[in-house]
Amino acid sequence: MHSDGKQLEALIAFVEETLVPPGFEVKANSRVFNDEGVQIAEFDIEIRGKVGSTSIAWLIECRDRPGQGAAPGSWIEQLVGRRDRFGFNKVTAVSTTGFATGAADYARRAGIELREVQSIDPDSFKGWLQISGITQISRIHDLKHARIILGSDEPEAVRLAALRAIERSTGNDAVLVIALTKEHVTVTEAFMGAVQAESSAFDGVTVEHPKNVRITVQYPEGNHFYIETEEGDAKVDRIEFFGELRVEEALIPVVRSEEYRQVETGEVISQLAAFAPHSVMGVKLAFELHRMGEDGETHILMRRLPGD
Image 1 (cartoon, rainbow, N blue to C red):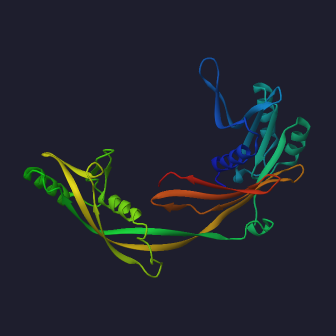
Image 2: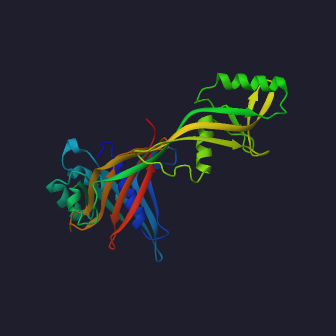
Image 3: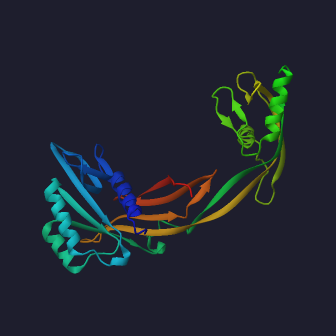
């Protein structure tokens, strides 16, 4: 667990949003302001909805401070005060380090529900998690070079200006413009599009056997690229791509295995298996499996992570 608590809050918010009945709203890190616009509180997780004709307001506060030991009684006192001040029907305290004896006793008397999230051995997941990692299979498009052929009816000045633009460009320069959308793309991105359009492009490609390819794409009028120049736009008639296609495999291990449970009864609310962050097409992703609810359904969560 990260000590900033955000990872814990994200876990609890996801589980509760999955389990609450339709019509309930789950908000994380909601701020409260007074009449003067000054912030007076921030709630980790706020859940609101209606049961019959009654409105329910439920507050869940999370504590992830491994360096400070068990959650103290002073924290429970703060939650009692929040419940009374802001009119919550129910308040739940979730800790990753357990609760001090005095804090647990006081919470029971004050009606504060106690829950905890603890790391556990994946082998204790009662058989539902049968793997220690997942295999990521990536299709790699490696463009070696490309030959851009301009339309034959382009004026000579436009043609020469476009050729200069091509010569100056690198693989990271978005020298091509899509006529339909006006979006700028690189030649590498155009190559990836060409490969994806060829349904058989990766036939026979394995980890041990990459494949060299030559793909020529003729672009029809209206669905073509052009190159912007100081002399005007130069239409691209076709592109010849030369590249290598290969497949790479990587084992993504389980890096977190946790259990979210009731303190009083020991009832398990959910179990989590989180895999190491990995990149797909340059996008960094987090992949998690959540087993939750009385029916033991497994939910798959994939989240985009901020770049480095």
